[in-house]
Image 1 (cartoon, rainbow, N blue to C red):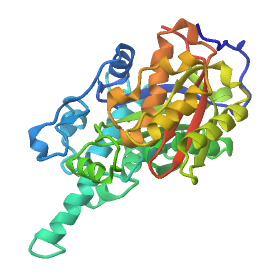
Image 2: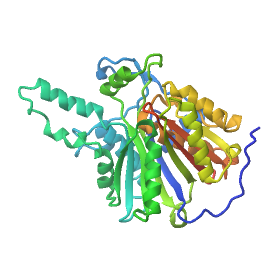
Image 3: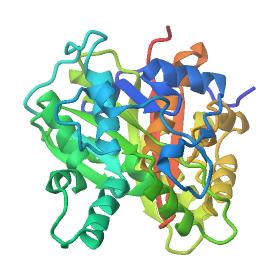
Image 4: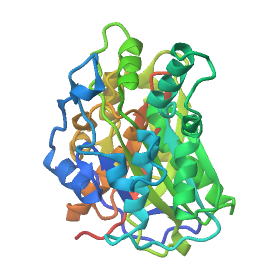
Length: 375
């Protein structure tokens, strides 16, 4: 049995960010229901790569099954759309629209978007550069691809699709991007610059991405099993939320490992996040590491295991089941916590800790209080 105890419910302080909705496009499928079912079942997602992708460093991938851009979004404006943008748009539809495609979530002039990524669409960028080198003239390139090559295109396209006029931001932070995006939204909402936010992160799978990760893998690290997808959340302030809150964001802390000691960096970041949240490590009901296939993976797990109750690390299935989803990983971790909590009556009022570590030394930790109704 866990030593973690539920806190008595209390009114959240004004200005506390709360998550009131979420959606996911993941290797489990398109939609929140598919993601939740896959997480609860602990299902693996690895499949053999489509032969149309060409030679790959690994034959196994964790891609969104049956994801076709024009089938999901229609033919208009999608002929040259990159996969990253499409994943974000489909996830935003799942968050804001009902099953019939009608707006189900109210937005206003200060509803913003913040999306975490790694480097945008590598496939689009490399294809564009290849044209410049291989076509008859360096400037004989497909100009229609230029907009899709910008880092902020996916976030901008999401805002345009849903007429969201609040602050629009892209955060490029690798595996910690989802938590950086959440912290960014928390700050701007606290400053009164936004009333609510679409917050999340996305990563696409492509041959270019696969080869980039293969060449970037450090000696001794396992070959990455790559995944993809997008997780998005609707974040509002507690006192103004128009929908029942699922979780309160108590704190988000970041740190950079400058001493080549990821375990110490994770411990320090987690302790600070818990202290800012006003909770004790023994209260953590669920802790979710990013489980990235890097040298920091074991250090991350060991640091959390030494900090939180033993069973906290087993309440949410390992993110390894989804493959290395890069920038999307932290958002999937939060979504997995919400999915697990929804099915567990003991989760109400409990504390969840989400941790992410990137290869460049970036560390981020978020502390959430689970307050959603069980179904």
